[in-house]
Image (cartoon, rainbow, N blue to C red; front, side, top):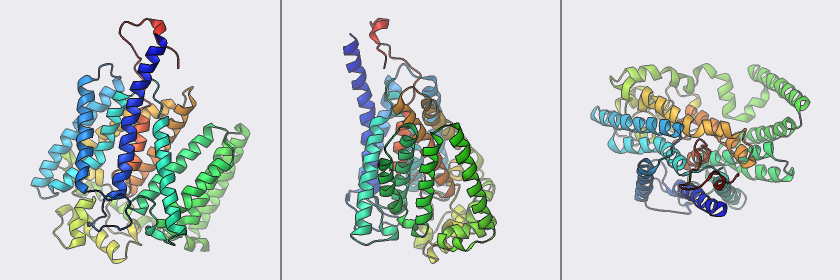
Length: 465
């Protein structure tokens, strides 16, 4: 009886992991194949596919959500709460999109694309949380994701070493160097998480870090040495932290002193800043950064539209690619773009992107809060916490090594993606599902509130893990 039950359980587990793995691979294929802003085809795409195939993903994800809502029975309280909040957020988003289109703040296509880009990872989390069972630990999904990272890195090294490309031309098997950098950084975080929990030989993480870091920052080549040094310092920190309390005190003290010294050098305008490209601009112009001004403009952007505080201004109305496309092509942008973001894109276009978000007098930041509104932002934040973040935090104290690794990786990766999303609307959560799908899928499989209760089976039928 026990053997039969285990086989059935493993089959259901494999089904949940298989669904997550298929979405991960598909996200990689799409992020490789889709076209750049303005429909400029990149001839280096390895997997060109029609853009209309995205409807297959949308239909599959929607059908799976309906399926788990209809047949899911022994639901965890956190799953029920998170999924309910998600559905409320989707309904309000649809209402906000209709109002935004009617008011001329967005278009139907921009609203659909932007809304789906932000909300679909949470839908995937709800689906996998429902399909997963007690022993799901994310190991399979992490293996799939690590394979995609390594493939990207090998392609990037080919572009760098064989084709002698540099900068944005080194994008691995992704369509954009920044998106490839996001994937590679999540790979670095996975290496560090495994290094923290396991006694690996030093050469294994060293080789992987060497594989990931230099190519990941080829698009920001003026900061490559700085980024590589930061990852090496993080690896050393993890190794020393695991050695005991004395080493932890020593490493915290040492890194604290180094941080103070670096900050003092930055304030004094040290000469080494000139070699760090945009970091020098940030250090010397902190009060006038576009990031700061973008958040200061958030209240007025919401208040300027009557429906803003309730249902937002409509997805795609403020800082998404669809919103600013008319600015770059000479078309008529929405009123919000004209008031808050048009100048920033005109400046960025004129300077070929070097100034970026660091010196914009206006900015594309805080797009989610403005476009979706405070209520949907609140619903999505709670959904992310209930379905992904909270299970990951619990998993870090699990007796199972694979769950601890997965939990730590999800926490670190979520922090990275959300921080990146807070800094720019283009390279964070919404644009690269290869990154966000992987994080939410692994976190969702860590949900552990229901027990297996096979019909007609006695207590001894459920074996221990």
